[in-house]
Length: 193
View 1 (spheres, rainbow, N blue to C red):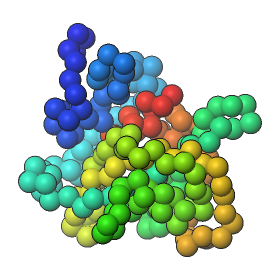
View 2: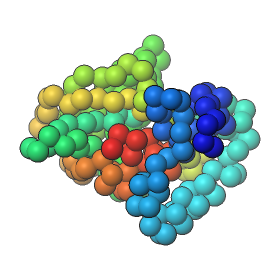
View 3: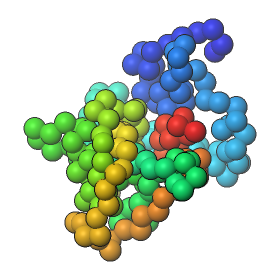
View 4: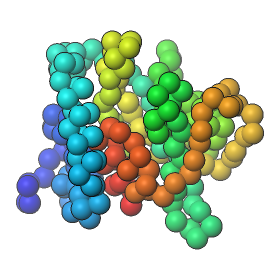
């Protein structure tokens, strides 16, 4: 791949998460991150990709539910960047705050709304998505295309819509990348390290 520059929009949807944006274009994921992914993580990636296989026709034909996610960031006491993860209500997996983009709402606005509803945080939202990823909601029978927006958190609230329904935790960037399941999201978060 060395010497070849591609734009993310020219790549098949599933390939976008395997690359990080660099000044010279799109480059393979860093070897540092690749070395930090243990064998069980590789098995989880394979398992995750297997769950997408039955949905390839929907993905190809663009039958996707539009969602937005909030990649909430803050500096810890030592100035290192941390990412806010929350647990999903049903499976208790670690995820970013996310949800459907409502009518007449931009994805950045939806990401900000979801960050407050699910974790009680707000801040400066990056209007342009940092990236996108795909996941399946098998119970609902839908495939979701999620636009991920960076939010630099500057306000916290003790009371919010889903208080007590989720666990929220601030973690270092690479730990956040390790905890989430979706390979494209792992790469997107790790690209901030």
